[in-house]
Amino acid sequence: MSDLIVGFGLVLVLEGMLWAFAPDMARRLLEIASETAPATLRTSGWIAMAAGLALVWLVRG
Image (cartoon, rainbow, N blue to C red; front, side, top):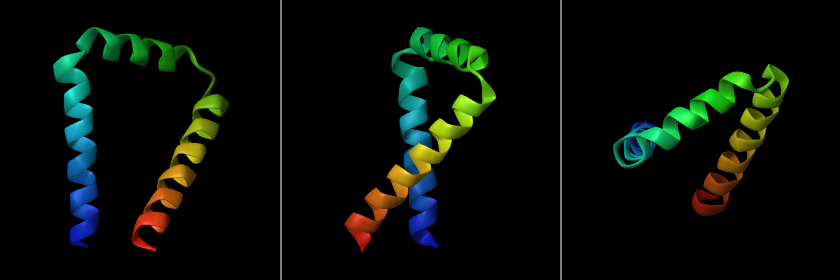
């Protein structure tokens, strides 16, 4: 359970860095995402989840 909390903490750190260091780029990314087809976003999400799972499996395996 502590690994899950650490993972969420790291996500917050990375998200916070984006907004703290490059807020204009973050806004542009949100605009691009809002114009992207839901199917494309869904596919990208599945790919990102699979890559993250593979990375965790390789490191923690």
